[in-house]
Image 1 (cartoon, rainbow, N blue to C red):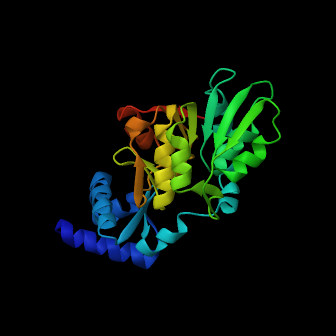
Image 2 (cartoon, helix red, strand yellow):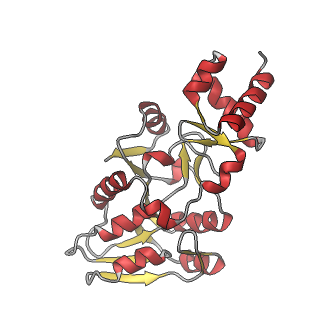
Image 3 (cartoon, rainbow, N blue to C red):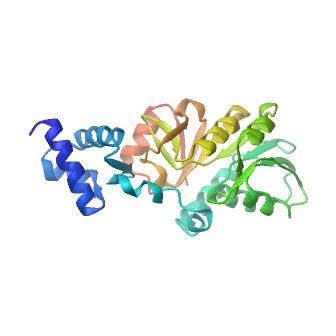
Length: 255
């Protein structure tokens, strides 16, 4: 079977079954998992499937990837709690400035801040800000902008402009997807532009992402692995993904 024939068959099979793993597809067509991953990448570029962690779903499932914050808050809670606790070890010294991206894991980091550690916190996330308001040792700054209902975070030109002259010691950054080959992605262009500005405003970038985010490639890339200093994830990360990310030069902390 030629590659084009196999890819067409894969696209039809994924559409029919709803979701298939890389291993299942490799067995189905008697090829290596590396070949399947290349096929899925080609099919995603054509808009025929959407890659997710460990496999693929039909392209029509793309809209479901960006779940609302309330839904994400209830997903992988134990793993996110462990990631948050590990991320606390990466705080700057007392008096430092921390940028908080929006996201269910960054909210947990904010809630877990040590009460005795004095910080300047800057965020565009309404949810993060609501947690930090109760911390007397935190000097809180809320960025302006249009608040997206999906992420409960400010985005757009006003948010980016406010970040332009800021320099933070550490950024706790979220993502919808991360791969060793393509970097960090999200489905929304305004979110992507704001995340780029967050990265540009930070001396150290700490990506906090549970293992379900490793593998998917969404519509808009906002950073490469070279832009990230450390990834904090959970122990459900596959050995292959862990190897690929570290081989690409990324420091990975497994919580």
